[in-house]
Length: 451
Image (cartoon, rainbow, N blue to C red; front, side, top):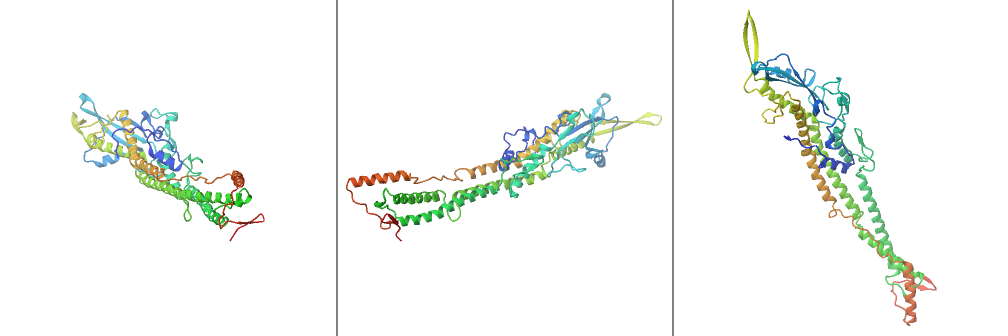
């Protein structure tokens, strides 16, 4: 994905950062801060650029591709990148002057090979030259730590979550720690679900026991018990039965699992899927596109190809005799010589090759291209994952319900009410109330439970 216009470096809509922070607790630096410590001279992103005016013209035969391999491209003349070029100049503007752009890349390189993707931790580094290109003090010191924490630490955090039993608890990457109160462990979902299951199992088991007790004491209270300890006991058994029956219903307990346990496990599954999907997206991106220097290298290579075709190869020469067997060679540009930095076959002119503003624009385009790859390969999938996770975790899909207490009668008040009701019945001359045939039989003040 190529960004022809510079994408603003903001973190307001960075769903990748938000998703990783939510799913893992790993709070990487925000994307708008990653390149603040990776600027060379003239605030050029990811590179130092030195333009040298040569005292000679090194003519390249248009068919001499060996010249290009030896004088232009990556790892040339003990420099990361060299782009030679000509500018019009000399007598009457018909001559040419030769220049070289010597470029030092700032970031994670791969020895003598072009920059590639793949996980690296990076860190601090500094210029080997003192006071070079106006870079002194801390301006000649750089760090890739924030960049790598974002580009690679985020993906490692996702893998830590889905592959490690303790998730991101106590985990760190390249100096960025996951705070204890932000760490995420998938097994904690299982722990919470199992806790609800145990509670549901307890109430289910006890409800069966209490149900048997209720059968033994009867479904209707014996009139003789009213206002007595036996009546309080009867009320207690029926109150516990209503409560335990209600708890089992509210917890949706079935088999060995509670409703809450099942819902929590579904929430875990949704989280695991989101993290796994994003981890796969990151695997692909980090290996092929994760290193922003790869984008800068590719851009410089395309510009070099344009300079070769439309600048270096657009020089002619003329040999004149100046007497006594001496000759003078002069070099002249063709009518199509192009003095701008442009990608081969494209029209995105960055500016004149001698202007530092041109190289600053090139550096910004490389960063912008990297940003575009982040948006396409990480941010957009993260948006989709967050939307799906939100739907899965919404109240319409995950409902833990409420567990409420039923039949929470005050036994003291029930005892008092029974006594008062019994006294009122006696005063009115009412006969004893028929008791349930399964009710306990009172003999001599004792309560016997009929089998």
